[in-house]
Amino acid sequence: MTPNPYRTMALNNAWANATLYGAIAGMSATEFAAPRPGFFPSLRETLNHIHEVDLYYVDALEAGGRGRSVYEREEIAQVADLARAQADVDLRFARFCSDLTEETLTQTRTTERQDGPVQEEVGALILHLVQHQIHHRGQAHTMVLEAGIDPPQLDDFHLQFGRVPSARAYWGG
Image 1 (cartoon, helix red, strand yellow):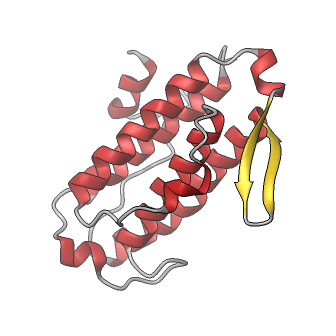
Image 2: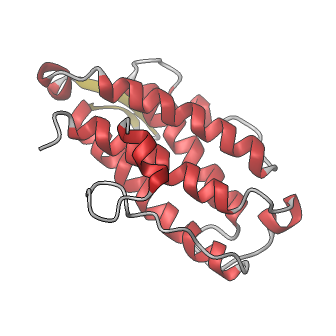
């Protein structure tokens, strides 16, 4: 059993994002913004959504106090720039999860909602953030295929059997 499954989920998240961005690294800004089938109409909008929601939840986990103001930003138009920004928030999330204690998991954090502040448990916020990432990253995966790029395998992380070399780096070996 993994000693800290939350840390492992955060590292899986970081690896899957890096792997997906690696697959589209050569994509032009025009192709990145091109209409594609999905909940959001382009890879650019889908990946920007993932990034800004991560900013929102990581800020809440860190008790940063920025709340919904994280959404007051320009959409990032270049793949490389968004990849760097995503890697930064992924690292913050992994660091937060690395320092978790049983006590921290049951603490609450304030999430700013349209109807006012809501208290949520840290453990639930982490699980929601990971689920949100998986949900929209799956949509992006389909968009990558539609763009004519072989979508990378994004689920060979947790098991020893079949773990891809790029995932091993996130496990420390």
